[in-house]
Amino acid sequence: MAKATYHIQRFDDLNGWAADEHRAALDVFCKTADRITDPWWQAACHLAPTSTDPRGFFEMYFRPVLISDGQPMLFTGYYEPEILGARVADDRFKYPVHALPPDLPKGATRRQIEQGQLAKGHELVWLSDPVDAFFLQVQGSGRIKLPDGSVLRLGFAAKNGLPYTSIGKELVARGVTSADQVSAAFIQSWVRQNPDAGRDLLWINESYVFFRILTDLADDDGPIGAMKRPVTAGRSIAVDPDHVPLGAPVWIEKDAPDPMTRLMVAQDTGSAIKGAQRADIFFGTGPGAGAIAGGVKHGGRMIVLLPIAVADRLAAGVI
Image (spheres, rainbow, N blue to C red):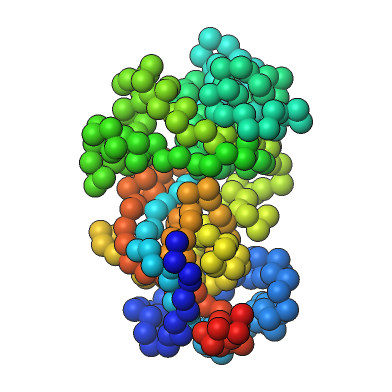
């Protein structure tokens, strides 16, 4: 991958900047501002909660920077699934969601974990569909609706350390579908219609995610992101922290269909989110959000708002 380059922009260069709801973006920025420990960010982070002019705040303390590594922009979407489940296994609910076993063998693959029952005894909840269990791991969080009507919130705890492999790309490589037709809904449908081949297909992604039960979230809170705070629908994105600082405001310009120009905040990460021009937009909770998120695979550009001193030093090659 090419070395990242940094290009200073003007706020006037950001399409739709003046029309955005900057207060909404500032409120989300403030949720994780105290998690940014870099001293170059401290002035902006400390003053953000007291700002009465959100747009002026961003324009005074930040400079827009286009970070490029030679790869085209790709926006995707993610969400928090709502899935039926049970705390005890039975004939219907027989596919487990696991906490991290303390003795998991290093390098154990998805197939080895499932076939060898390497996480047995560490089940948090049981689901009725192996496809739901797989996509819960892809999303990294979920709400499990239990038979008594209560809801169990699950959040990311750990991974087995193996790289994520795209199931969609594998289906395209096999000639099952085309790149412009593959989506989460297509993958789910294909696996359910081809259970044996589908099981082997899912095993190609050797990465396995373990969860923890979340007990301190309000009903209207999003799932916990990489900054240990809830993410916000329509304002939080997952990024590659090797290129974009976590907690940074990020201006996105997502292409059609359903174009989006909006100030977001980089508050999450993801195994498949790699590169300077790569972002996963959080769309919310439930099947409606899932339908939107699963169909997002669009181009455009994103521009990171960095503290002025940091932006200038990066552009000059000082840091």
